[in-house]
Image (cartoon, rainbow, N blue to C red):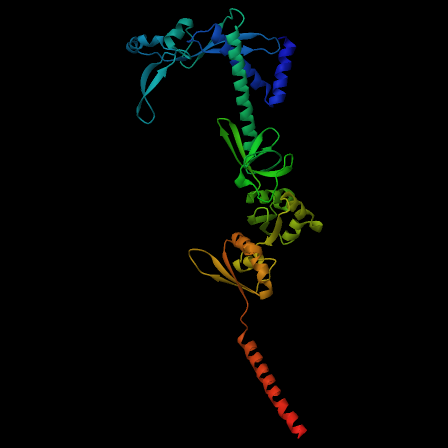
Length: 413
């Protein structure tokens, strides 16, 4: 390849794989080292190379580190093991924990001090010796194939690491993505530079994930696996509601308004408890926005899911009352129970269905939001004074009704 062709190829790889030029050059140097070992090197050489992309020249070196000498008796004992691919001479030493461990000498990457002194008297333990090597000729077909495999493998490793680093910092955040395709019950989501997985348990049953749909997703986890980074995203998590509120409402992002708790039945309804310490701020009004603009945007991002904004209160009585909105509560009684917190809520009969909600959803969400077990009872019993007045009125009406026929008879006579 010519000089311009080499630089163009490197630039293309950098652009397609979104990796740095330094990473590509390092990969090429590793591949050239593998090719040299294949055709010209020996097993006792620690080959490193330097590649100049501008000139296309390659320099090859044998790299070793100077270590302390082994005793003569140990060298003699290890003499028979020189036929191994890598000779490992053992030397005992005491570790920091006081246990005797074995330190191994690797002649491929290390050189003993006495041998280093023969090269130059200036060498001491810990120095690095770089010996230039000559490239006898062109690399053969097998060496070129080895270099190609190393380049492909190393570039893939760098690409995977870059993707992992990019999305690890976005873990527990909300990102935009496009539905790519379905694989069984799982949905694959295109995040731009990689594909994420949304398992069935992270999906909303009422949503339809058609190919090409653009949505917001909560990045639940980012893990490095043998097959590369695995990114799990969610649409059903409670945290996606919190993050969308933070994105759409600046007062929450700045900390003026605080989200205290969230209860959600994904795809159907959510309740969000908020509060503020700034008396000049209307927290619910700020979340709803002018003409409901902010809350409508949030509902749209949640694909039409209903969202109730609840005012948090330090008093459990008031908080439970607010949490059962839109129902109007007549009375709340807290029960002292060490095992669980519970409350009995009394509502008028015309508010009973609102307090419970369809399928018990309203009271269920209110219970999750407040962390109280809530029992709803109707206010059917009337006060004693009201009952007494009603009885007196009924008795008087009956007495009048009895006297009326007698009066009619006397008149006729």
